[in-house]
Length: 423
Image (cartoon, rainbow, N blue to C red; front, side, top):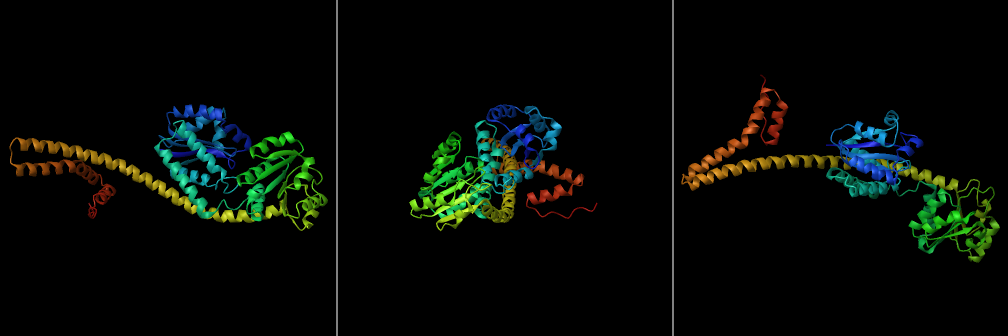
């Protein structure tokens, strides 16, 4: 049995190749059927995200060639090109790679938490489609435990390193209870989408999304249980907004000092937290002059992100040590398990011999033979049969000058090993 991790990611392959190798939900179902019937595969789980496509599996032989060939055929790709942009890890290396991926140490954004959820989805799908066996199940469970330990002991995910997350994190510092706060988000691009989701997950009371085209903002507003409005509604919505985050492509500022000042009067100067992520700016710089406004720009956020990236790199160094502990624990547990199988077979063999000898001894006693003679014969026969095979093997090892086997035999049997013969 060989554990293997095979795939491509943002470090090894360009985006066009990553797109072609990614599995759609429909393809994933078809791929599962093929992998389940593949002669080289015992167990497998498929992880497919925008930045990586990986197969984690248990193979009958430590040879990735069958999987490489299968992947190229499934996606109609040149096998040489796929090989040049892919990577392979086996056994201990595969265990360590999966754990590093799960902890976010192999991600484009160091320490990002989303990948762990994606790995759990891959695990669930492999179980549902009967691609997961005991070996891979144990590996994933050990990975989840290690990832949990890394998150709790290093705080690698505690420092926001995306603009969206940094903006929300700053808001939480100013408004300790977001459940009492309202947010006005201006724009409907990728950054605003992330901000909206982060705020929603943080328990924000209400989210209003203002966009030039209301229809484009409605799906996101529905997702976060908020409202979508047009840009003309900004002055009115500003009056109820504790948090304002803007990211549009407008040529001129959308929020001026006068507009914000009028909103503050209606709010009776209740503090307002504002983040201008846009370049060029959506909020006039003079807004920062107002006493009740905390205005941050994208440059301010970048300073926070740089500081947090340094903290994450430090946490990543600590995480590497925990991951190595996780790898060692898993590998050791597998070795103990393998030894357990051997011990069980050995005990079954010894039990069979004992039962045969006992049956013979009981038969002799029933025939009226002397019990003392029968018991001595039973003990001698049992000892001889138990030791016959090990004795033959040790003599053969000595004849072949396999001192390593003799030394191992002495350790296994709990005996002091004799000095190796000089002859």
